[in-house]
Image 1: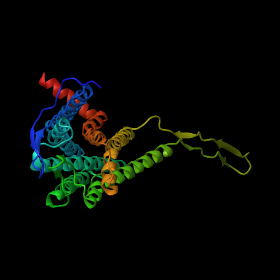
Image 2 (image 1 turned 180 degrees about the vertical axis):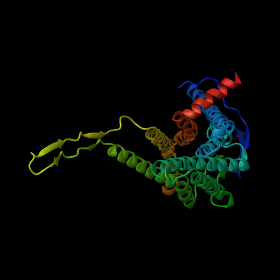
Image 3 (image 1 turned 30 degrees about the vertical axis):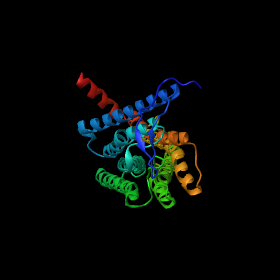
Length: 348
């Protein structure tokens, strides 16, 4: 394939112990330029959209309560993915998936990557749990209880994410190789099992279980919405005025009374939208992250490898989940749509 005269930036890099130095040079094809442009647009769109959600929550007072604190936590993690993680990952792609920014920045990037992505995944799980409890236990799941539980879930989300992300800094595996200029999550098998299960497989099991329970609850409610009919038996009432007078009998027939609900109540419509939103949120989350975490778990354990281009595809597919999260949530919430319109109309 003929390649145009477009080159990546060059830098003088000293090799490992051999002290070899040279210029990093990577010719770009048209396809590479288009790919990098699309990735840059994804970074900007992810940052702007999540920032817009955060600004809306801060400016609208009705959003200063649950479940919007869970949405704010998710938006914060996704803003951090777009602002701290994706740009450095784009620089890495620019230099042919080689890390030229040194060990210290590599460790910072990997720590932020694991922290923000894990927090984003667990925030999706927390939102799914909150919707599940509000649908199935709406009588006991009061506003006070909901606020306390949501705050606990947010705290646990960031605590667990911090433990998983900071562990390699204390010697649990290596993230940077100066010889090959690679910067990646620690490939230590024990850390791989711990991080992948803590960051993905455990929340995956939780969200799948939650959606199964939501589906069962919705199916039960649909089945229980049947026509309730009451048809009393006809009764004969006898009235005797005297022994010698003819007997008079009156037959009273009661009409059939039917109770039937045509259409959905306000609460049923709200629960149906919430169940649909959770289903789409979970489905997109699984599709975006499962290729990356399958590769992350299998490669270190079986000592095998896949082409670097596929690693990049899986990684950026996972990053794209931070772009879809606010789109999915706000699409099913009329309050956010109205708040967005009011926000832009005021600025005009």
